[in-house]
Structure formats: structure tokens, C-alpha cells
Length: 63
Image 1: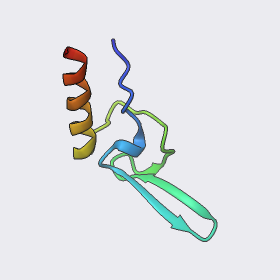
Image 2: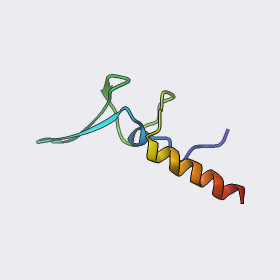
Image 3: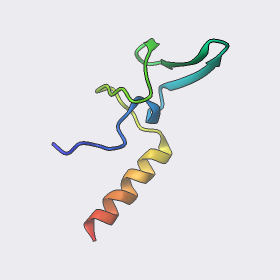
Image 4: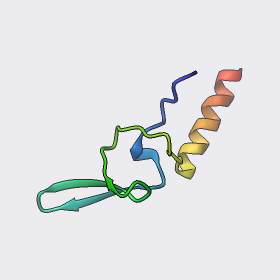
């Protein structure tokens, strides 16, 4: 199976960063707990601009 270079929490629609006094906190609204931008879970749903980038990359690889 080919590894998806875009697959990470930070590119998911459920990823919500929040700046706090003590620093950045990253939360997954689907899973219901803190995460990190570079974590990967099987429930990943890419943001629209990530879908477009993936399609563009796929088209470039077909040439």
C-alpha cells in the first residue's frame, strides 16, 4: 500500500488547534481528545484543499 504523504491530523477536517497561555493545544473533535499535528489515525478525513492537492499530485504522477 502506498503511503499518503498528506495523511496527518493537521490536514484533517476534525483537527482543531487552539492557542493558550501555556502554548498550542491540538484537539480532534472526532476522537474527542488531544492529538499532535503529525499523528495519523485511520479515521482521517482530508480538508478540501488537501483533497485538491492530492488530485493534482495524482495527475502529475500520471504524466
